[in-house]
Picture 1: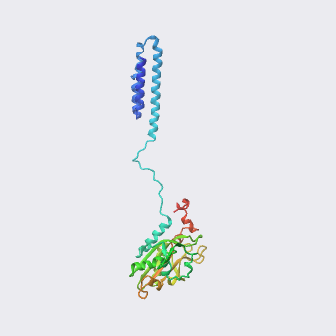
Picture 2: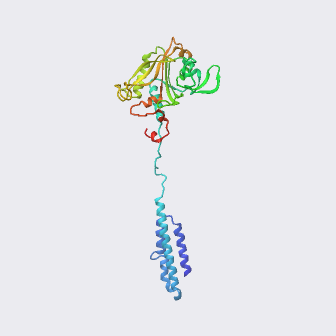
Picture 3: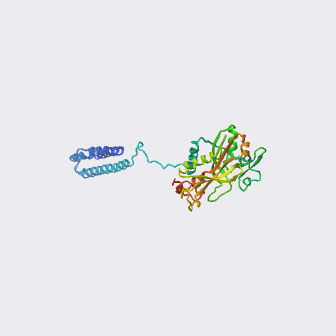
Length: 341
């Protein structure tokens, strides 16, 4: 009889251990500990046990019942915990944080889109450039200050007999003559957006920055076309209430040349601590110099054109509602800054 109790107990333990659902455990409990369960009914057979073995029989039976009860309870808790940790792969997960386009990239996209509406074609020209395209072809004499090593980054390689030294292009104007040579026969409507490099670094300058260059060459192009194009960009990019003005200036590769100002977005041109006189400087522009047209293979007696070159970071920092006190912050990897936009 003792062996039978142990055999039934081991049988129950095996079934409990193999159970994968709580309902199975309940069925096992009934089968072994219920009113007609295998261990319960053994007590009715105590009459078959010799008198001197009945105490031992009762003790073994009680131990078996307690072991089965305890194991069932433990297995239930285990299965209940596993239910709480259960994972359904078909349930939509928690979406991870997704980044966004950087301010400068978004500004470049906007500039491209604005000029694309009026027929400008986005072009890309080298950032590591020959001196010829960066300076010589743009009517800059050898002694021009911009060609000094304190202004421009020169690459330490042998000079080319035709094109001169290699530089990190200081402006996107290097694309002007390259575009003329590519197209050959106007009309030309180009916007060149690229990185530029100059040996300057302060709150309004960075040694690497982005610039966009506009070039239009065709018959009968005048300052009126230049002013209309600049007004269109200013109102499309900054807002319909913004205006531009031309201020006489000098650039070696345009004649006449102008600095372009835009009405202040804070005071609307009335004058405030931000602008002081109602206007903010945007960048340079002018009519393409005849010598530059000649360098590009264009007849200046037949065609004329205008060009402008502005900093991407500058126009970004001048957008209404954007308060960035230091241009260099735009290149910061600090998420406290980047996540604001």
